[in-house]
Image (cartoon, rainbow, N blue to C red):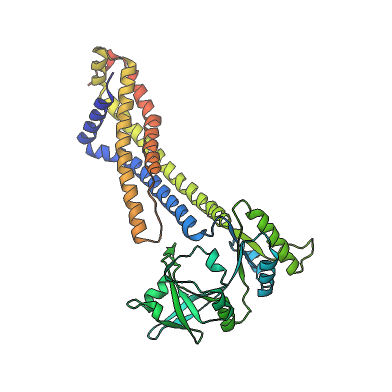
Length: 407
């Protein structure tokens, strides 16, 4: 019986001797493995990205807002816009009435212009946050500090800059010694957030955070608040959410039969939505990869059949020297496996290079995982076994006497 090393050597020799045929043989397989690697790498990168940056509320934190925090139905969003705002009074009622809550913070937001002494930036997200948010948020500061409860209560004009705003307005100076103007009022900078980056091309660092009372002083209380609530633990989260739901329904004068006119969301809510979206893309790309694999497998089977036809005399000689049908079968299967693994390795290299280039030059994230590389090799091996078995069986069934007379 031919050894795996010998079979691999013969397969590689055959590839080198028939370059055009080898290229056609490997092309479909390379495309299928490349597409699989690119898709899996991007999906894994996106999953990690969503967990780290989009759904990073914390396992024991949830949000409450008058509109869906994750929009899945346009009509539902239109209807939700008619809901009453979540007010400061309702926020304080929840904060005082929820005995199971660790912290209850509030956030108001709008868009606006931010100015330094020399520059002006438009379309900056202005967020007013209560002092409790310093103990709830997962946002880290690169320099400086959060504002205190006293500064929030007294509407002290202090501000935290997003990394992007800091880079645009104060690229060469210490921002903690500077101030910015928001809606005509001057705010002293006390901190700068760490860089977040972009989410699928959408910049996440163009924001300014000011105390909620200062926000309401500038823009009034016509903005609905978003509540961020911290439970004692992840296990306690459902019970705390139910307490908050009951408190808000009472504050918003909802009867027993009335539907909630507000929405609750956890990190799991965002992750479930992303899983629904990514699963659709994943299925589509896997179908494309499967079609490429099918085409590649058919090409490999046809080329192997041609190889069997061309090597009939060699097969007859091997049989006359004592090789059994099983030996011939395994020989051609191992050749097919060697060819497919060669194509798989090339496809993996091309796939990882393309994924890294996409990560470098586009907003798409990519994460390289060892199991993805293993999956690529398993795919190429599976193609070899499925589409290599028929040519191998045909070779094994050749009559030695007839094969020796072949021209």
